[in-house]
Length: 181
Figure 1: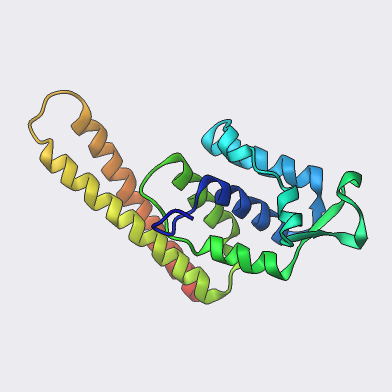
Figure 2: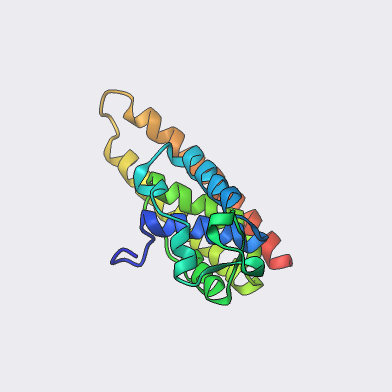
């Protein structure tokens, strides 16, 4: 993790792999393909993100082959208890301000939110809401500071503010849905 306890690119890949396999056991090749597909659709191809080996998860005891198969046999993998603990630690990490990595981690949080218990789900929605509100406040502050300046930045910021406000409204409705579970 970074000093501010947010996830590094390597940890984002770990979260994606552990969350994917927490849903259901799958073959090594399927897991690798699923992780590569999900991450590259959000961030584009990235050696930093896709260079992390899933085999390392097995070495660290976070996943294990079902039925004692070896990795060379394209083993079916399942998450271990240590893997579930690591998954939770990664899932509850705070977010950094907007970046491709933050977008990826946010998408992973939504993808796997249902795998957490109710209290952790509520806490994660609140974290996402707080992060979005902070971002909106920064956009509004920047927009106010750019008032009267030529160019198209103000128009772009107006659009970003509208998107942020819509996201906050959506997150508030998600908060109500999670609270009703």
